[in-house]
Amino acid sequence: MKVRTIEPTAAYCHLLEYGNVEGMIPLSEVSRRRIRSIGKHLRVGKTEVVQVFRVDKEKGYIDLSKKKVTEVDIRQAEDRYNNAKAVHSIMSHVGIEWARRSECDVENLEGLYEMIAWPLARKYSSAYEAFKTGNASPEKVFGPLNLHPELYTLLVKDIQERLKANPHRIRSDIELTCFAYEGIDAVKEVLLQGEQMGTESCLLKITLTACPHYVLRVQSLDKVEAFTVIRAAIAQMTQLIKDKGGNLKVDKEPWETSAEDTGKIEKNDGDDDDGDDESDSEDDDDDEDDKEIMAPSAQEKKKRK
Image (cartoon, rainbow, N blue to C red):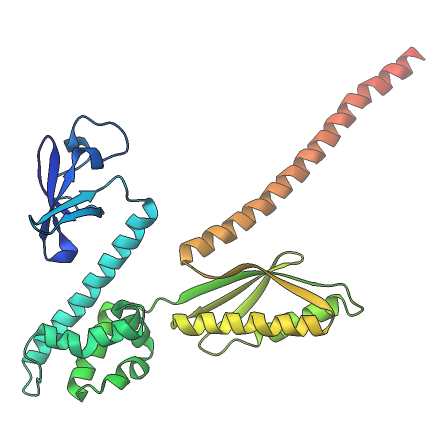
């Protein structure tokens, strides 16, 4: 929502996702703490994430709350809103260009949404995810829509110009052990076969964190494919190590990470190693100190003799 006006007891705003319908934030719903002035927490023209907690259909009142919104809610709402804006920008530009063509077979932008965006939103998690997938595999995503060739070309070109193809990074943590006769050889064989489960478009890498804990990572422009590959690899590795008398335990189910999260994890791993080196150096320093402390005492003994 965007704050329109601020009064001593409430703030009035427009709900951007609902056609700029007016809503109100009471003073008691601005913050969990006791406040005296709304102006210190809200500003006119600023966009905020709020929660609708009461609606009066007869009078048309919509009461909003800012204090009930968590950091996770804010992040998800902002991502959803920005993604919807990106989709609408693409659809609007394609609609304007398509309306100039003699082959145009839709009357307005809503007709274009009914033809492209809404069917994709029902098939995928959102139209934005469909557009991102279609950026790498346009025929796979937009082919079943049976669009006019000219409209198909306009849509793919606009998506490739406006959306960057960022791969989905999926990770899973496992514990792999084998106390049978083959032991470490069985673990190595299972790890190698697990990496071979990756495809050209979805490579699978397995790294050691601390024996017997391993991390499986895949990257793909297709989110569904990435989850499918990593889950299939875990299932096959589980069966292989079980046949050899070992065991595979999933510490963390497959989950999506960002490039920033991956960097932080690698940095933390590096920091741990540095910490070990520092502790080793400190131990060495302690040993040297002990020698320095013992040396004078030895000399003193000689002098006494």
